[in-house]
Amino acid sequence: MRLAVLLPLFVLVCCAGCGGGGDTPAAGVQNTIVGRWAASTIQGPGSAAQNCPASITLGGTTYACGLIDVRNYRQDGSYDEAQGGQRGTWTSAGNTVTVTVNGQSTTYTFSIVNNILTEQLATGSGTITITFLRQ
Image 1 (tube, rainbow, N blue to C red):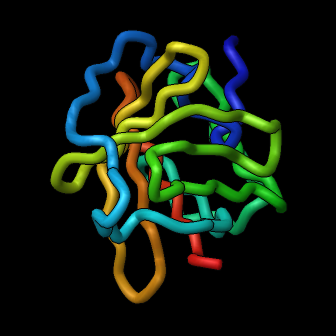
Image 2 (cartoon, rainbow, N blue to C red):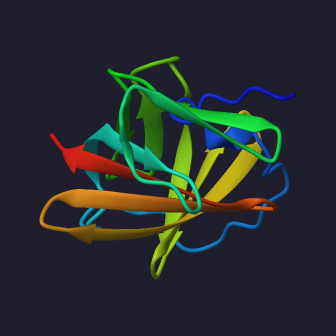
């Protein structure tokens, strides 16, 4: 069984070679995902959302969110996570965001409503949903 810590990184789980695309944010360009986001809940298919810290096993892979998981999407296109020290880049197009760390890219579908970021990762076994609160 592969163990992937969700918030430090879906990237290592199943999306090596996932497509990306979109435009890297540039100075002066506003994007609603820019900012610091703290993990709040995680949810798998057919289950209720669980408050972080929590984990879900789906298709033999464990996805987890920690108590101090924080993602930073910076205006210049850089990305980092407080827990695990992951650093990389991000791009977005429409309602998708692609995070690239150590050459591995993961694409999420996202929405933001009332300072709550919802990211969804489609896997071969279903969709993992995680929510974040803007800090």
